[in-house]
Structure formats: structure tokens, C-alpha cells
Amino acid sequence: MNDMKVTISDVARLAGVSTATVSHTINNTRYVSNETKEKVYRAIAELGYTPDASARSFRTGKKKTIGFIVPDISNKFFATMIESVENYLSAHGYHLIIANTKENMEREENNIRLLTAGLVDGLLVASTMDDFQRFDELIPAGFPVVLVDRTFEIKKYSSICVSNFQPIYRSVCRLAGKGDRRVGIIGGLPRLSSTKERISAYQQAVADCGLAQDESLIRYGDSMENSAQTCLDELLAQDCDAIVVCQGLMASETIVYLSKKGIQPAKDIDLVGFVDYDSDFYQLYSNQMDRIIQPVEELGKAAGEQILKRVEEPDAPIFEKMLTSTYKPHDIPSSWVHSDR
Image (tube, rainbow, N blue to C red; front, side):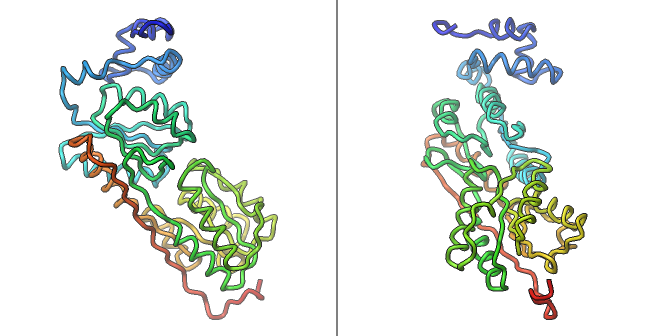
């Protein structure tokens, strides 16, 4: 196969299906079971098959469709962002296709191959890749791409992100000012740019405020469900005065888990949590924890706006937009002091 162009027949043969099934899987033109799709995707990845995007585009012109690759569609942060993107695109006559990677780099690779092979006009990606070169090699030359929420050190593609450095720095300094000495933090996957920024802000604040600089107080979860509990157990075992939770899903899980253990935020432990979307759940605890509120809907709208600009002008200069989260500390009850713990 190395010396010859891989064909759709090669993919069908390896997957054990017909060429028509491969075509329907790629083009989403007929129902194909998830099991069969997985076989086709694996065959495509193993063979390195790429459909002829240029020929398809010549025949059909623009598809009026944008792809959005996200790490977890069940995460309310990404679900809210998807809705915002879709609202913007729909108002401009475009459709949206969602691909879910589940924070798996191989799944992301397969999705990029398929979506850039003539299925969409442009691609939004909240990448889970740890290697820019691996990501870059998947993108056809000149294909419109905008990175969302997560980016790479090499600035080859336009990006729309949210900076959380200042809100985290301020929150840790405020905790120190209240008397907390051992402040733990739960970040996302260590390979992600968003996680690196948040941990960097924490480390800078810890150093500047004279707090305990203990690497064991830094724990890592991910964007998936049920990743906070183990981190919490480890931090609570180290007698943390406070915990910063750097992701909305993990923050809500933290509140529930602490409640089950009979630990009350603001009284038994100080808590800083990310708020990724409007929710009555967060409002119930707004007087018990500091909140870092991310502009998710604005992020989605900006992503939709930027990808359409790149579709219209693929050769336009790289555009980087950085939004900022809002830090909202809760009011400290006058009757509460640390000696009460």
C-alpha cells in the first residue's frame, strides 16, 4: 500500500464491508450502525485513506457546513458552546456537524481525516492532541481551521480562547489573605494549553503569596464525568485549607461530593470553582464559594464568526482572540473565622 494510492475498495476490504457502506459512512448519506462505522474508521486510520476532497469540492462547491470537533459533548461547557456556535452559523445559512473525541487523540485524528475530506467547508477544533506536528499533518493545505478553547505553542492556525490567568491568580491571593496556607488545585489534562495556563497562574500566586509550594497539592482530572473524586480524596487527605477546581463539570462534582462527606464549603473548607454556564445549581452555592465565570456563549459566537471569515478568506492573516473570565468572590460571613474550623 505504501507505493500506491489507497482506494475506497482497500478500506472496504479491510473493514469487511461494501464500498457503498464506506461511502455512506464518510458522506453520512445513509444510516450506518455505530459498530460498522467504527470498523470503517479503523480501516481508514490504519490505511491512511483520504477521500479526494478536491474532486468532490469541484463537483459540489461549498457544502454550507462547518465541522466542530469537541472532547466531550456530555460536558455542559461544550454543549453550551456548541449551541452558541450553531445559533450563529444557522443565522448565516450554515449547518454544523459535531464530532466527539472523548479526549482520545486517535478519535480526533480519525474525525479530522473524515471531516476535512470534502464533508465540511471549515473546521472548529477543541483539540486534545499533545503534538502540534501530528495535528498539523492532518490538515490539508489551506483548509479553514479555527482552534477553540485550546491551542498550541506554534501559532499556525487562528484561535478563540479564554484566559483564566488573572482570575485564578486573584482567587489564590484572596485565599491567602483569608488565612489559608495549604491551597490545592485540580486541573484538567496536563497536556492541554488551558490546563498549563491555569496551573501556571496558581503556581505564580502561591509563590508570590508565600503559600506552601508543594507539587502534591496539584492534581489533574479531565473534561469527562467522575474525574474529580480521586483528586478530592488526595487533597483532603493532605489537610488542604482550600481547593481551586479549574473546570465547571469537576466543580459541580466537587460540590456534590463534599456534601456527601458532610464537608461544607466556606465553613469547613474554602472553594473556588469554575462556572461554565448559567445554572440554578451554581446559584444555590454562590454564597459558599468563589466563582470564575467563563464567557461560554461569547466564545461560541466568536468561534462561529471567525470560522466563516476563514471560509470566505482562507488566506487571511492568522487571527487570535482572547476572552477573559470574570472572578466573583463570595461575601465572607462576619461571624466566620478560620479558628472556628
